Amino acid sequence: MPGFVKGAMWALCVAVVSAGSNAALGAENDAVKIGVLGDMSGLYADIGGDSTVQAVKMAVEDFGGSVLGKPIEVISADSQYKPDISANIARGWYDSGVDVITDLPSSGMALAVMEISRNKKKIALVTGAGSSEITGKSCSPYAAQWTWDTYAMSAGTGATIAKRGGKDWFFITADYVFGQTLERDTASVVTTNGGKVLGSVKHPLNTADFSSLLLQAQSSGAKIVALANGGSDTTNSVKQAIEFGLPKAGIQMVALVAFISDIYSLGLKDAQGLMLTEAFYWDMNDDTRAWSKRFYERMKRMPSMTQAGAYSGTLHYLRAIKAVGSKDSDKVMAQMRATPINDFMTHNGSLRADGRVLRDMYLFQVKTPDESKGAWDLYKLIETIPAVKAFRPLEDGGCPLVK
Image 1 (spheres, rainbow, N blue to C red):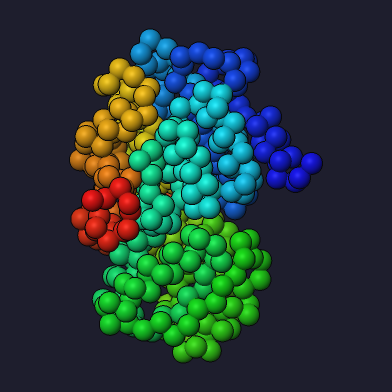
Image 2 (spheres, rainbow, N blue to C red; image 1 turned 135 degrees about the vertical axis):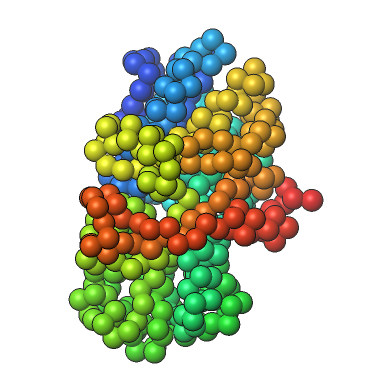
């Protein structure tokens, strides 16, 4: 049996039905079924994983646990961060009655599941993956990219640093669709703002040794070394850059995509001064603090923006089902687009025709150890980026749904 088939079968076997039902996944009923397809033990487990499952459950509980007179069920599985395994799980889930799949932490996974959701006319809420291709040429009428994308990160972190005088750039890039689109989008912003890209180097997922890549970056003469990667690849890059003395040599390390869990893992001694763009931070206002306190009580850690996004997307989806009185995907997606998105992380957000959720984004700087007042007091707000500036103009993405 091919390895990926074994992996898919294993992942399906460990899927957990959270509503207390021990019935087989394929049992026919009218319950709304939400599938959380994530990375439970790998590179992105901290920004997603079981914590995203819990965020989705919080949304279901806050909604009331049922809709249209039927219970809401949450199931989950580990994709092992592989698009082929993700596609097999998604196909089985949709065929057996799952109505929506969320999380999808990698762009390859998201694109694979989106193609199946399009064919099955079922919904995919991408709350984890960030490639701007998801709402570009690969857009789908049944998919939404809920939290962030590579264009927004480049428009936030990349543009701000370039405007502040960071002109000579070198990229260390994860060699898959997410990293490639992140480098592309950021390089475009840098050159538009008068900067230059002096070079780039690619690396595979889960690289342990960045020494040769950092030496290439240093020898390029660039003053900005941009990390177009994520998870432990980002934290390892930063730690090893400090060991090699790049910051002491006047080279600024830029984490184009970093999450609160990455900064917590790095510690303020190493992470201080880093600039990063996020869609959410727990300590922004009373609403974000209240929800994050509830999340912390469950998980003993503060939520990432993707975990907050999974809650937001799930709640908006359930509200749409209630409003139209049906699980029909076309009707639900139309209602989701027609209704403003309002919750603790999003204020008057909207879902565009290409699947992009528009919301304000936030440029943060990591605090120094002296500035921090607690273990999770990590960011200070530098700038609020309005949605209209944070995300790619609708007509520029190449989405075939846009006329």
